[in-house]
Amino acid sequence: MSRAPLLPVRFQVGDAVEVLDLGKAGHVRTPHYVRHKRGEILQFCGYFLNPEALSVGDVSGPPVPLYRVRFRMKDLWPEEVRSEQDVLCIEIYDHWLTPATHPLPEDTP
Amino acid sequence: MSEPNPHTVHAHEHTIHDHDHDHDHHAPSLVMEDEAGNLDGQQLVDALQAVLVRKGILSPGEITLEIQAIEAPGTHLGAKIVARAWTDPGFKARLLANGKNGAAELGLKVGEAQLVVVENTAEEHNLIVCTLCSCYPRSLLGQPPSWYISKAYRARAVREPATVLREFGLALPAGTAIHVHDSNADMRFLVLPLRPPGTEHLDEPGLQALVTRDAMIGVAQALRP
Amino acid sequence: MRGYHDIGGKAAGPIEKIELPWQHWEKQVEAIRNLLGDATRRVLSLDELRLGFESFGEDKYLRYSFYRRRLEAMIDTLEKKGLITRDEVMQALEQVRANWQDLEACAAPTAER
Image (cartoon, rainbow over all chains, first blue to last red; front, side, top):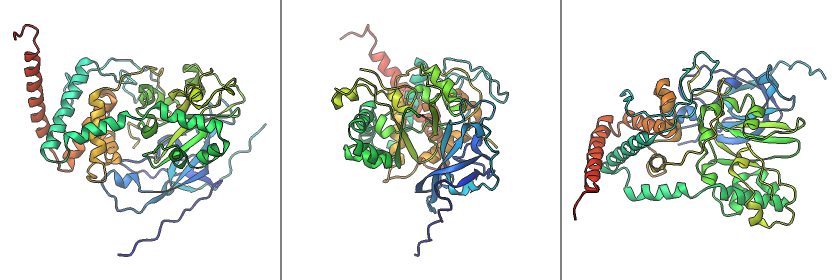
């Protein structure tokens, strides 16, 4: 039996990404508070079996690239941010990410 | 699926003050079992165990051993890692690059996929939460505290971390950035707290005694000597 | 379609800074789950367990304690997979309760030796 090639690692550290809302029912590990938000790839964590499939007993794969993505707190909670420097980091699977194409508003000092 | 028997769900109610109208206003953030609830839980798990043992899926001996295995880890294991990182810069660098490998150097096996150790500095303070459930480096630190599992912590730590930290008695300088880590997938996280001042004379066991579970989650600093 | 467990960022009250002791039955729940998910069995993964408590209904999610949720989700999922039935568990529970009462009767302080 031939093994399928690994899914491509589509993003590199520093890439600007946006979290998709895939509208999936069932067990997903992408919380709503980061959906549609723009962040930056912090780290590539490796390949892992997709929990969405594992939750229904499907262990056949393929394993999916997993990244840690960093968000500025001010982009997540604009009304409440304590500091420009505060960030939130979270793990996001590759298929939940798309390249962020729009620039963020310029920070005013 | 059977409905919960109202006599089998016992809880001390701590009502949350909730501004979110699709929440049940009377639902406690942390449901605590009273004596009757604990008895119900014990009897129900004994019943499940009896069925699984009868079917040959589990044996009682291995359940006993597994309970011992999950009781064994605790704060003391994380403290060993922290104290070594405080005293050995090469180890610290390796630990920050690969936490599982770093722990293995000390003979500590991390059972989860990977351990990410995040370092507190004067500029950055780290805080760990799992908003979706209760992910925690259990193979190292053991059981997470009840508050870590509570809905209030899970909901608020990612949104108002400074306020949450103040509730734990930790006030950060305005110039320190807060880095919140939502442990939602395959990584597990451990905070490397700042080494307290006035500890230069302490050996590793002396340093280990200063490292608390709460400091490794990020809601506290390490103790001062 | 937001799950009732997906609560990051929702408004909530004070955090209960309480240290609850880890009960024996709670450890037993975790031990059984670990063994069911181990490499020799693979009959209940963590993600299957999580799907269980994410889908058994918001009422149970709000009213059950953390370990009770896991125990209930474990029973539900094992039943869904055809390994046990809840009826079997309930019958075993009756037996457990009967044994418990027998033990309590034996332990009565007025028992004569």
